Image 1 (tube, rainbow, N blue to C red):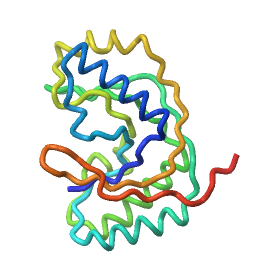
Image 2: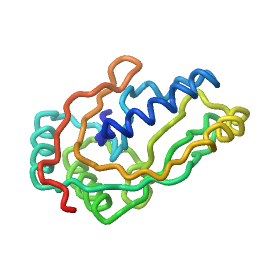
Image 3: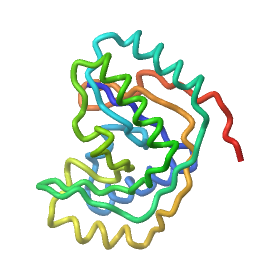
Length: 182
């Protein structure tokens, strides 16, 4: 299974890394580090022909203009190991890119991640996952309330992350080639 993501710009990547380092130091949370790059996941899929995928993503990036997204607040996916995240607001450019990727990649995929269906997808930036507990949720959220998450992030790449051992590592990064129109 691979993930198609957009890695965050240097400023926001540093902010997320600082937060996850604080969560590790103060609460022992390291699960989010299975993906060592702060990112927004667009979808997950099982793709048999990686060359076809890479050619496709290169073409998409050639045709796609950079755009910005906004984040706000904090969110929680509940469960035995709650996921704590920064919600990314859905916009027309983000929805358009996501729908195109989902539609086209479903044709080259043997399996698509169910939570990335355009009708279910909740874009987010994960801060804690996998090793959280309901008991830690309150203290972690209280700690994070000291921060502001009203960010504007430029989406400027599509990146393939591939599972390698216990981690999801960067397979290849493609840059959106059309400049952002101000």
